[in-house]
Length: 336
Image 1 (cartoon, rainbow, N blue to C red):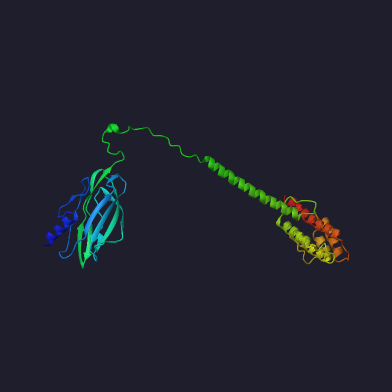
Image 2 (cartoon, helix red, strand yellow; image 1 turned 90 degrees about the vertical axis):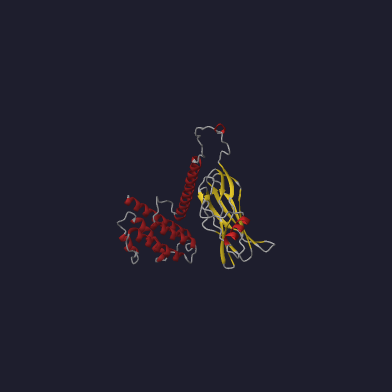
């Protein structure tokens, strides 16, 4: 009785009942085992079918195999795994589509399988197994085989005379990027040059502001000289030397800046030294006369009660800058 029901359902679904033998799965003659239909006696098997789009395909170009299963509500269906199509086809991707409700109360599920044919000629996509579970009982039915025709890139031309002869290789001229590379390098060099020019200009402007009023420019300012000149510039910008009430305090600040600078420049301790002691310490240096003259002039305002004018204060500030730059030049000459 089970065999009779299986045969009837197989004929209704358009599939063949397989025994223990095997049949051809593709046009190349590669063997593919046919799907065995197993349907319990008291269930309604799903109605399954298969079709391909396009049915005329080129070798190596993907086509889509559509598999549908129409079944009663409450029946679960799935494609049997693994999907084996023989040597003539390669499965690339499988996509299961959601179920659709039909007016008669049944459900339809569709699978889309992307496959690539690798053999020429009239081929057949073999039947696929669809498993199902209904009322706690499991079974399996098979789709119909799907015929497809696979052609090569030369179409259906079998006459060798219609085929083009061999042609010598052609040189493919690619784009020449050398001009682009050269332009990019040139742009990079130009950008670096502009950045360096701006940095150098900013540096020169800064140095010019530091040595303003000194009447000379050092060949190179080191950190010691630059720090002292920056402090002198800050003193000038505060305006202590411009105001009569603050001028003496400005002289005191200017003296301390130069004393700290001389200690750092000539590597001597100057903090607790008087002017005469400091002059004596620096007497062996080439710029000792200039240093003594400036320090003693500063002391006349700090301790001697001399009331310096604004003009005299500005001149003292310029001499302080000149002292720094002169001793910087002396140090450079000694180092050379």
